[in-house]
Length: 138
Image 1 (cartoon, one colour):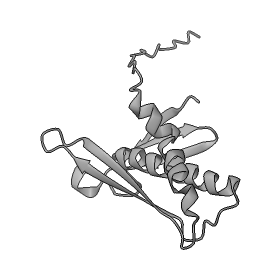
Image 2 (cartoon, helix red, strand yellow):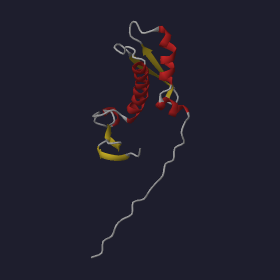
Image 3 (cartoon, one colour):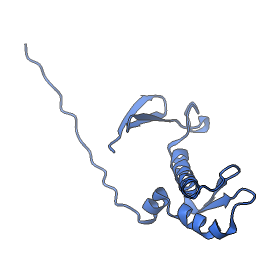
Image 4 (cartoon, one colour):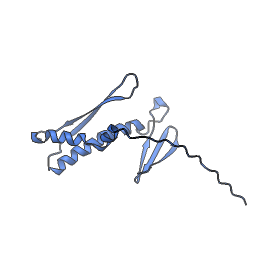
């Protein structure tokens, strides 16, 4: 999916793709209006929500209870780089969740596509495309 990025004003940056618009902003301390999550917040949320989807899909496929199913994400940061050094995903299962599925559920969550993508460290290419001026001669 290609995304088109636009700049609606201030520190806001929007991404359009797949029929959706993803709004981002910076917190007030960074000069933004704090009107939307920051891009890094969306990045972290994508990990947690992807893992949550894998947990939910696992339970649905086995007709297991999901009421009370919960996932918590904790991020530890490297003091020198201020980048995440460890991301911990903890899955809380509902009361009565069959113990025989505990390991398989964790394996399912561990298979999250966002997490796997980060783990293989995809290559990034950054290109500059210069806009061409259109000159109309009457």
